[in-house]
Amino acid sequence: MLRRLSVLLLLGALGGLGGCATTGGNPDDPLERYNRAMFNFNDGLDKAIIKPVASGYKAVMPGFARTGVTNFFANLGDLWIGINNILQGKVGAGASDFGRFVMNTTVGILGVFDVASNAGLDKHNEDFGQTLGRWGVGSGAYVVLPFLGPSNVRDGFSLLAVDWHGDPLWYVGNVPTRNELYGVRLVDNRASLLDASQLLEEAALDRYSYVRSAYLQRRRSLIYDGDAPPEPEPAKTSQSGAEAAARTETELPPAQITNQRSEGVIAVVDGELTPAKEFSETQAHPVAARRDASGAPASDYEPGIPGNYDDALPVAPAQARIGFARTTMRP
Amino acid sequence: MKVVIALCFSVFANAVAAQGLAPDAQVKSISDEVIGIIKQDKDIQAGNQKKINELVDAKVLPHFNFSRMTALAMGRNWPKASAEQQKVLTREFRTLLVRTYSSALSTYKNQVIEFKPLRAAAGDTEVMVRTQVKQPGTEPISIDYGMEKTASGWKVYDIVVGGVSLVTNYRETFNAQIRDGGVDGLIKSLADKNRSLESQASSKPK
Image (cartoon, rainbow over all chains, first blue to last red; front, top):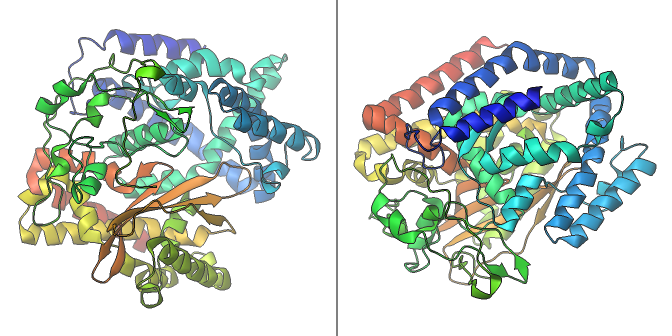
């Protein structure tokens, strides 16, 4: 039910994509008006129900017991993580995930103890959205899903249409038991995020844009397994000194953007397939390549640029070139 | 999450000893020292805000370049602010960051920090020091430090946690605030935010 509703709303959001004017000026977020409303809805729900329950859970359950619950669900997740690693061609990582599952399920008593981490098998973070990203599917617009929170078109569809079926809880035959397990997992997840959400409350001037920026950066980083190339790498204007400013400066003038859509999208680095660039406009030459005397990046940016979501098409590896010269971090 | 952010700050301490080191060696020596202090201090572990502030002031903050941080978060709007405005902005932004993130120091619990090989050439004045924090049960979280070489040693101008840059996170909000209310509008909302956090903190018995 919840899922069906989410799909409906997501479709609705997509339907509005074409005609929807940008409101806030972030090219990744043409649906900002809807998203802000949904963000506030989720927030209200969280404040009214989920957060109080999670706080109670945290107060009542001793720390070691909560860790056990977290580990139990994390262990179940490792199977799907392993499958996604293999789908992305990372066989070693996938084997490690299955090894974790076997070890934690047996020695770790149904996953309650994470013995595999101590044995040197690190946990990974994968899902089908990341797999699609690796395969070259662009992320599409930023979308805040009802109940589920920040997402984008690609990851939202992956979550609702695919990841759902990779979740072992989905196959628990007894529906009341399954719902209980879902509930416990939700509360346990929320409880482990209490500190972080408190921090967010304090740190952000505008929580919506703070969360959006964090989500977009985080997903990009996850797709590259934490080794994403510096985002706005000025491939042709990489004069020294300007590089760092360019790396941290993502804003571009609209005039530059239109020229940059045909950049190579997939790069082969170290024999591994790296994901498509998302929103290749952000890869365009930033004006930030200039720095003024005060050391600040002098970039320009006008809001109101509609996002371009059809430009992240994969190209054959043969024509690929190293799109992201790592000029800022030389090996 | 809070723990991870705690580590961001814990990593920067001991200004004197670390000067002249390579940036990653500097991060390492500092983090070892601060973690050593936290491990031995029961008050800090219990969340004693005064002691945490002292530790942060003495060991951590000297290694940050807050004016560069503020300039990056402001982006193209930085040159539009007067020198006086820039000073106020830097002060308010610094207050916000320090207040918000330093309390996280008390949540440190035996996480292990691993350093990845530094990707930098000999003459580089800007590097990214890349580390990973490991804790059982969750995937390792990366913490990267954007550092620049200054006359007084290497200084941090950005922290990137799990791929999320602290500075970038603020940029859109800053842009929007300036668009709506000018530079003074941004100063005002930063100051208001700091004031409300302060009154919350003083009303809470700590």
